[in-house]
Length: 64
Ligand code: SF4
Image 1 (tube, protein in one colour):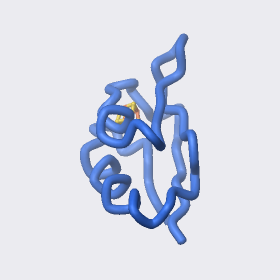
Image 2 (cartoon, helix red, strand yellow):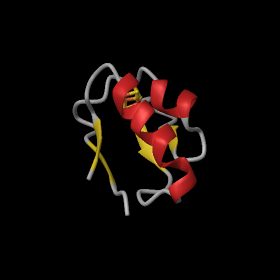
Image 3 (cartoon, protein in one colour):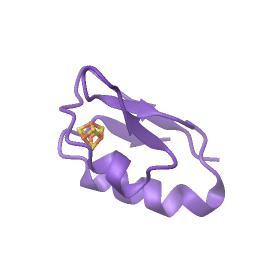
């Protein structure tokens, strides 16, 4: 099973993650930094989550 790690101190609020997988990633109202809605995504979203990790310009999100 996949688990998502997010480092909001690294996140620059680019929003690529929320744009790519809105079911899993959101952005905080005030800072714009990443909010992980579900850190253990269902299997059918794992490919999309990996894509979001690749697209993130700051390297703030990772999967283990
Ligand atoms: S794509 Fe990366 S930098 Fe942009 S909001 Fe998501 S985690 Fe933050």
